[in-house]
Image 1 (cartoon, rainbow, N blue to C red):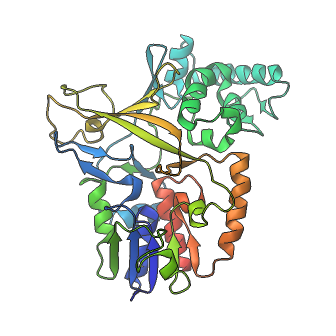
Image 2 (cartoon, rainbow, N blue to C red):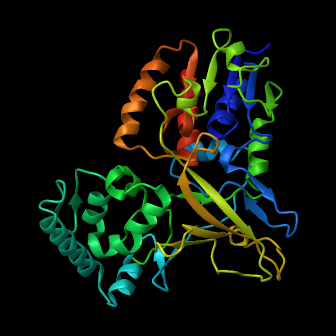
Length: 391
């Protein structure tokens, strides 16, 4: 007997389940995997004792006080500040693009004003060469606007030389899609700074769970009115906690892939998946930072993660480390879908699925996969809290 079924034990699903349980409902969480946390799950490497992020790097950051206060009920936080570097043609640069990146790339010592003027000139030249650059404009003060895809927006933001060095080929590897076919919102996640601030995120709250992500999600799910059903695929058509058994009988929140829920009736949405090549080098420090991007097509991986650097406060071995080379490719039906690609064709299919979803009484769709929308962890938790309020 349950009052509500949540499909998916990622941050979105667990947040809704916890809030509803605290408000008196009996909630059943159905999860295909054998652990909670979705792609934000972490575990301890058996060989080295180093905590690894099993599905790629996850750094929590937010400016949403409600989200921070909510999750802080289940964990304390480290003081970790995320900094990323990128390799391009045998040289290492800081990311996101900042005054240090600009001066290093152009072999200059520009002031913030001079750097803005340089980038504005580069953007104007690119717009002229492209015959208007899909509606791109750039002012002398460096303020830019664009109508168009990722490439047009990126060139308007940073000019063509920086775009081609740090964005174009990395994005092509990452998304397996030509950058001019991607929406401009993809590049909007990467800030450009005209200071030497090299922090990847500038949110007032950021860090990592002191005891790891697995402990955070397990505590979030630990409530007497939350029933966890692990290792159960809601869409497999069998069992008490399947789509066939639950839909129409009990309210359902579905956080899996929306196209799979409807058996791909409007076509497959484009997803990007990740592969990882794991290695345990016999050294106490492989690359000197947690994340090193590889901007050139000559390197098949997009980045290398070194997990010991996420927790410098821990006593990790001095002679071993764990790294993961990250590869990105288009997802097939058998793959884990990580990120929506969101091409124009995808958006057309999504409208069809949204129409089908609107005709599913008693079923809500949420999360990154259920809404076909990229969500950082804090955005997922914020959206889940809002949905729980409405429910």
